[in-house]
Image 1: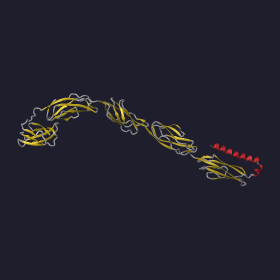
Image 2 (image 1 turned 180 degrees about the vertical axis):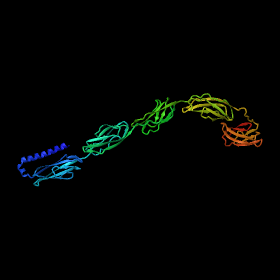
Image 3 (image 1 turned 120 degrees about the horizontal axis):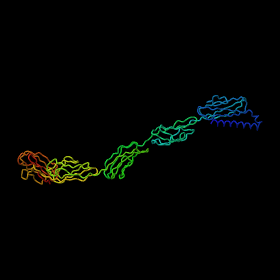
Image 4 (image 1 turned 120 degrees about the vertical axis):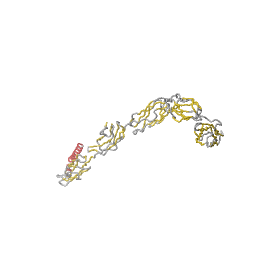
Amino acid sequence: MGTVTFQKQTLRILSFFLIFLGFCLISPRLFSQRGDTVYVSATATPDSICAGASSQLLATVVGGTGPYTFSWIPVTGLNNPNIANPVASPTTTTQYHVNVVDAAFHSGSDSALVSIIPTPDSPGTINGSSVVCRDSTAGYSIQFVPGAISYSWTVPAGAQILSGQNTIAIVVQWGNTGGNISVIAGNQCGNSNPSVLAITINSPPSQPATIQGPALVCNAADVIYSVSTVPEANSYFWTVPPDAIILSGQYTDSVFVQWGANAGNITVVALNNCGESSPRNRAIGLETLPEPAGIITGNDTICSNYENYSYTIPAIPGATSYTWSFPVGMKITSGTGTSSVVVTISPAAISGSISVEGNNTCGSGTPGSKNISVKTCAGISEYKAGTGISVYPNPAEKVLNLTINSGQNQTELQIVDVNGQLILRKQLEIPSPEFIYKIDVSAFVRGVYFVKLVNSKRVVIRKIILQ
C-alpha cells in the first residue's frame, strides 16, 4: 500500500509542475506579473495507517519568494506543526491542513488526509450444528467481515479442521470430546474479538437392559415384551422370529407380539440420530400343553364319613399346576393344585370318578381318571327306625323334631348338606330317656340334608328333605 501511495504522490507533484511549466511557456508575460503566487501541494505517505503508526506529511511549494513559513493544523499528533514535513501520528482519521507564507507574505494552502485503518469487527454468529455425533464431520461458516483479509479458526482438542482454514467456511472432523469452536477476523492492523460456538458431542445409545416378558410362550399367543428406557435413545427397533408378528409398539420401548409356532430370539436396539446401540437379545422357548395325566394311585373303595384319603399322580411333564375333581361329598383338605391331595369323605359322599389334569399357561392336558366306590364301613353303626331316634316331619318346612333315646347324656348333633358342608353343630345334653329337640330350619336352603348324631358309642345318620 505504501508503494501505491508514493506513486500517487509523485504523479500529483509531476502534474503540478507540468501545468506550471506550460503556463509559463504559454504566458511569460502573465507569469511575470503573477510571480507573487504561492502554489502548495500537501501529501501524506502513507495516507492510511494502523492505530499507533505514523505518516510522513509533506508540503511542496512552487512560486513565491523564500524563505517560507509552514503552519499545519490540527497540531494533535504532529511532531512539529511548523515544518514542511512533520510526522503525523493521529489516533483517528484526520484531515491535516497546511498554510504556507513566503517572504513577501504571499500564501497558499492545501490538505492531506491520514486515515486510520480499523481492526475488523468480531465475526457474526457461527452457523452450523451445535450438537454433533461422535466421529462425524460437520461444516461451519460466518459472513464476510468488512475490512478483514484473514480468518483464523480454532477447534477443541481431538477435533481437526479438514478444510477452509483462513476462509469464512470450514469442515471439521469431530472426535469424542466437545468444546468451543471459535473464529477471529484479521487485517494488517490486528485481529477482532472471537466469535464462539459451544459444541456438544452425542454418541449412539447404550445397550438396552434385559428384555422383560415371558421366557416361555404358547403357539399363537399374544405377549408383551419391554425394556427400561435408555436415556440417550429416541426410538427402539425390535426383531422377532420369522413366524412371529409385532402387532404394535415398534419404535417404542414395549411391543405387543403374536408368537408363532417356533422358539427363537427377540432382539431390540436403541436408536438416536448418531446411530444404534449394540443389540439386546433374549431366547424365548415355545411352551406346549401338558402331557396326558398318568395313573391315579389311592383307594378305589372308601368309607363314608372318613378323613385323610390320599390320591397321587406322577408328575406331568409340562404341567405347572394340577386340577382335581371328585364326586359329591368329597373335599380336598390339602394339596390343592399339586400332584398329591388328601381328601375328606362326608356322610353324604357318593360313588363316582376321580379325575386330574395338568395345567400351564397354554391350557390343560388330557385328564386321568379313577373310579371309586363309597361304602358304609364296619364299626360305624346306624340306628334303624325304632332303635332310639326319630326325625319328623320329613319332609319338613319350618321345624324339625328329633326324638332321642340314646342312653347317653351327651350327644353331638351335626347337619351337613349333600356337598359335605357342615351347616349346624351343637352339643346336646339329654336329661331324660325320651328327649325331644326342636330345630328351626326355616332359614335353611331347600334341599336334601343329613342329620348326624355322634356319641362315644355310635354314629347315627338320617336323611331329611326340607321343602
